[in-house]
Image (cartoon, one colour):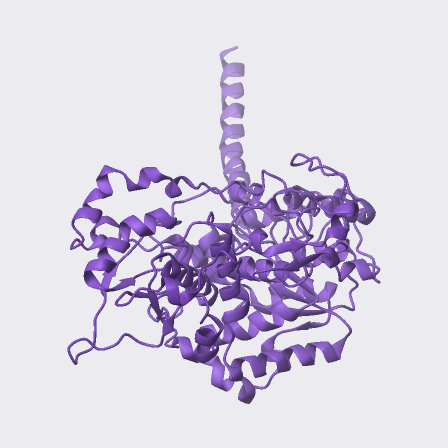
Length: 572
């Protein structure tokens, strides 16, 4: 028995003796296999993209990863162009009207001697344009002589151009001669250059605000410069002052002859390519994307590159890219813009003029748009370097060329709601309601995200539904809503014949059920939040500001933060 037990123990010992090395070998092989898989496996970002519909990940990212066959197929021939694509149906019943009323006093009777107002603009070309327009009205409110505005030469754009190098200064002075006296420079004081007293006013300052904040200073100093002058005048003014705004913006501000000549040449070249053309303000530059805080699927490389740019603005808070996208605050990708246009019925043969700086991702980002619309142009492709040389070193002059081509286009598409978009939207409303398309990004977001699961017919029908109220039709924005420069309702008159065509009473937001070409009364309230005018209330001129009335020697700059306003960055 003892012998048998010893043999059994010896057998077990031999078994373990061989089993342990075997286990070690197998474990090592598994470990090596794990390391191999780990090294060759795609990144989490890449895996995430593969799980999302084609060209969309996270927040609607452009992605060329292979996708499963889907119902969504863009027709090769594109949409079917019709006349309604190039005109707004009711535009013939509306026209710009900005003449002064008989109650608007002549300039000679309201301009007081020894009162000079100068303004220093802020931002890019179009933000400065709003400042110039409002400065004329401010001078009228103060019964002052306006000195030709000083353009911003120090901000983001670093453009050294003066007013007379961008705008026709003699035309500006002559065109406004019945409204405001304008001089090119301050007169000398005691044989020396007169340095005006520098101060600021709050945003959306109304008539009474100017009379209480600025007028006492002007009466004492006689020459005042309002610095950082952008959006410093209320949206809510009397009818004659609003119409004066329109006379400045749409009639007095004219680009110089060299800019106009080159801009019109670009327009003529676009016209020669086809009967119609669409101008697209793409706004997909690296700084714009960094500023928006949106994510477009470029993984860690994109986060690192755009994050570095975003650090320029210390006042920007970290945000949730997915939430920004859902709220419609992210520019559409070039591909999404193309899909929207095709869904609206624009044929792939349509010629597109793209007004944009450096597109993030370059040709690779533009490739999907080019596949949808092969005929893509820009000022750099339809003009030679020699032709653009007088303008290329000046960002405002280059922006002016794009402005002219976009303004003259049959259809203008904006991919953000910056200053150029607002100025052009208002201008195109004033001059005949030419179609101006602004993506309803909040509604389109979900549609782009899920497009692989629906047919093209369903997709295009939904796009047309979501874009009602965002196509530049008359009356699609309620008067007084948004910035006046975008919606100059006071300066748009209605032909009596139009009234018989518009019997339907205004409908509530979000309950518009009309054809795309019909008049839409209001845009989706969720997409167009009402701008607060609390800073226009008389409460602004309370006890805390009474010292400005009694003691005009105080420099108003001390009351206002010197932190750069976000609006001046990437405004154009």
